[in-house]
View (spheres, rainbow, N blue to C red):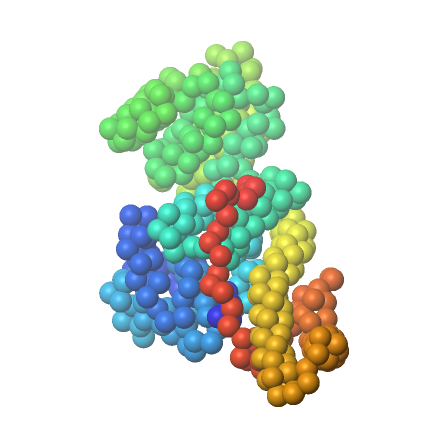
Length: 438
């Protein structure tokens, strides 16, 4: 078998979410899907990575079998009940080194919607574990996935790709941490109880904020969100009463007029004995009067301010991503040398064994035809034929062994096998223990 690595899939860049949803696999569907995938002609090992932003089939294939990618598209259509014509224009195919590079970039979050996000690595580990336990992954994909995990670890530790926040909610909390040395003894108030407030609450809690107050026009929703974060729900009409307790105030409510004015904050500051307050206005229209920022001990950021910080952080991530790409490229070359050598040694052994078998067979015929064969004759013919075989094999075997910094050309091993009609033993199973990964 001439082995290759192939990825067929679609992602957030090539397909809309409505299509990705239809082609996606739940975790509990993967084992059955993998069993079907292994029936595709030419597929020898397989794994499926399915998230909200991508659906990818990763396979080790027999390259002698043509059009494996078409078989994978047919599998997707059958497994998900979607007509091929609906999704095929959105598919991409990566083969060989390009497939390995793609896998490493995905694990390192270089191919993510938000570069540097950590979720994809955990999802890949879960999906690969499913492929491994189902017996769909063997030596090649075992090595490929575990190297991708190690590459992701290198990228995280050797670059700052994930060090800068790039979501509005996380940036808001990071800004609060620049105003106050610590959030551990601080109280935050969320005005509004929608998705943005929920994300902000998660970030606040993860950075140790002591207490959260939730004020919302629909009190039941305030109660629901406050309960999720062990906070205090407040009716919106009592906002001013509780505002004096808040060090950080985040607004993301739908309002046609300002909910907080300079006069309100002036009174609140008096009650707080001028202790600083940090306002983050994520409302559109704005929740806080911009004039609030003119008061002493008050810091106000609106969506435009947050967007500038996000843009700066994205630029920083892009610079770090370029460093990460260098790491990925070096790791791809290292993996590819290993992958090429998978077949080099068995090919050399098979070549020697085949030619040696021919030599011995022909030698025996020649010796049997001699009437006066002596041990000396046999020794001379053994030496002669062995020398001829070694000289003939020297060039092809030297070419196969010549690795160094460059791997064997992709088609050299396959050409040697075809020229000499060699048969190799089946692929070995993966090692019993996982390699070191992230």
